[in-house]
Image 1: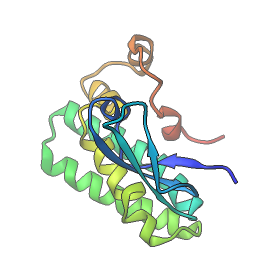
Image 2: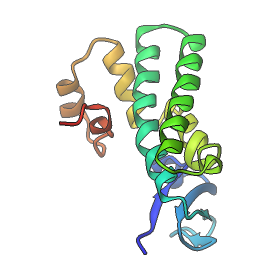
Image 3: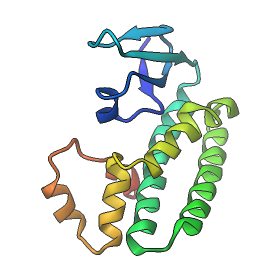
Length: 157
């Protein structure tokens, strides 16, 4: 059994906030973090396909949402893009055998909303910078964080 951590959490925020949720396939119910005041609540799932597809597709949606913001297209455009992106994520995952419950939960829309709208999201911030005209090479070379999931957006060969 290989555990997969996926879900609605922001890495920097986990060190600042007393509580957050995530989804794990399969795993334990609660896992204490280094701080005694912080508890990571872990929900389990046997839907590895749903967890992994949602985890990859939400990055593409978040970069696109950031581009909307960087171009100044407004929140209506961004909301439409994220809504349509979630529909496409659901269709793709269901066609691959995922459970619809996974896609409407923390690993699906929960993580997608955080990644698209959260100010700490690396993928969203890459999109904002792309929308403002920066090159991808410039963005990636100037970042000291873990590289965003830009590879999820590139065509497969």
